[in-house]
Length: 452
Image (tube, rainbow, N blue to C red; front, side, top):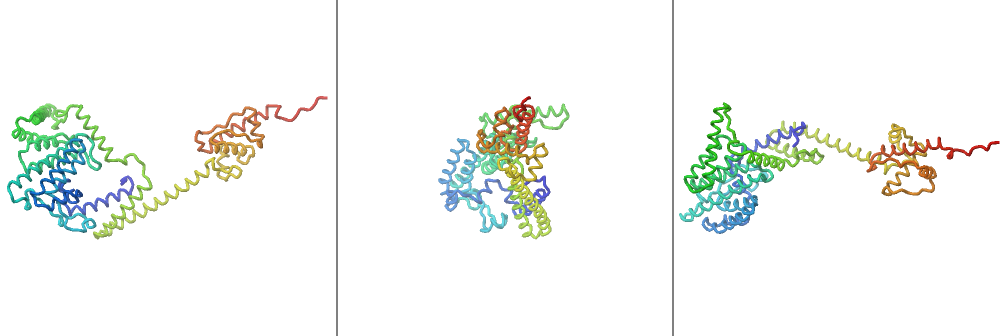
């Protein structure tokens, strides 16, 4: 939506009103992680069939889905791996839509149930099965976190997502894992990275990362990666405090945590992300884009009327009418210009019967399209162009033969022969040389009288 136009700005405002209206009915849904939201419209048939089985009996099939995700992860196909892990977890924890007509009515919290067969009411009765399901879900959440973290580090998010969004999803997935196993060192380590690595990380984010790493180091004292990152973050925080005290800036300097090479790489990833998420950047507006905006406006008007906002709908309808009128006028002018361009193309002009517009245009450049000599030369050039630029013999045109025999230079033409003005320039040269030659060369004039 182009907000630089009055109509586009109006549409953006109207869409905002529509979104605000819908958000009031799905605030709880919007608070769920993306992978839990996706469980409501799960398409994986294996997952859907597993939900029908007793909780303990689902583990084998869910483990196969997880292993498929592991294969994709090893190949760094993160999007496919995420789908597999979502399906594996979705066999035990998912959202159920109770309104069959929700696609027309919209998503509303009141018609959605959260089914939790991991630690909720639907969990297995057998203690061993409950523990096995918890451990399995913890592992899947951990793997989801690894996928989001890995994709964020590549700097190539999925279309519609972003590097920061992937970091946030990693934090969510690791938090879900820690809700099931509070001392899981992998989840703590990955959440610490997802909190501290983004360019937008704050002092609070880094403090939270240090807290996570401290717990992870206590749970896994031999893990060198955890120790190394914890030392780096603590050192960065200490040096930043010293720098703040000396410079009186009161700002946390992220360069203490990352060297210039790392920062440059993150900036490059951010630029790449911007290009991926804005495919239309730099492209001119087209009639198709305007038509799409009009259709979106119609849908918004209908929604506003359904919600009793007739005044807003009427105002938007007026803007839409002006928008459509401008669009039709643009199409009309474009069609006229196309016809005019085709008519004035030298390849299509009937030089024996030029239009007043063509005569006037040529006259501006000192060429008389009513002059038979000029008409013949233009027709010769036209035939030559139609034959692919090849020269031709014309025994019925003695003026052209005579000019060619006397060495008149070829008419100047643009490489594409796209403009009448280039042809006129050539005619001016050819006819000019021919007439000057007639004036100066006695051989071209009448025979001299015999002297008595």
